[in-house]
Image (tube, rainbow, N blue to C red; front, side):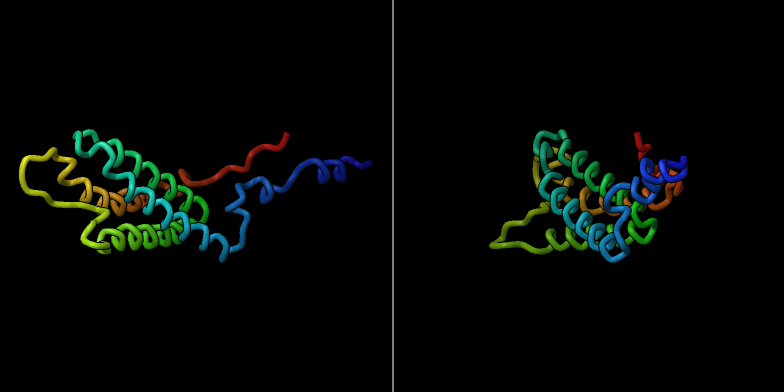
Length: 154
């Protein structure tokens, strides 16, 4: 066998070496990005209040980590357009959950009166505005930070 045929049989193309979501067509990438935005905001909305009543906001840190990682993936997958789609989907989800209450119970509680720890009073506002801020910060970072190098074949 010639060397070129042998190389073609053993080495995958760079397209095949990228992550699964990066190899899809544009429509599937858009659906993945929107679903990731909705899911990360949904999970973050439930996580953001953990530890707030003790003034140890580990839930906010976790929620921002989730939204940040999901946003990084969206930008690496589709560039600025992916980040914009992720921002829209996650913002609509989080703000929609904040404005929608069922039988008088809110998922995102903000603004209290009285003696309460700072994060217990303000975790809701920090989450709602912070999820937008985190994504805008990722928008202005250099594009080279979002490139995914194909893994090397063995």
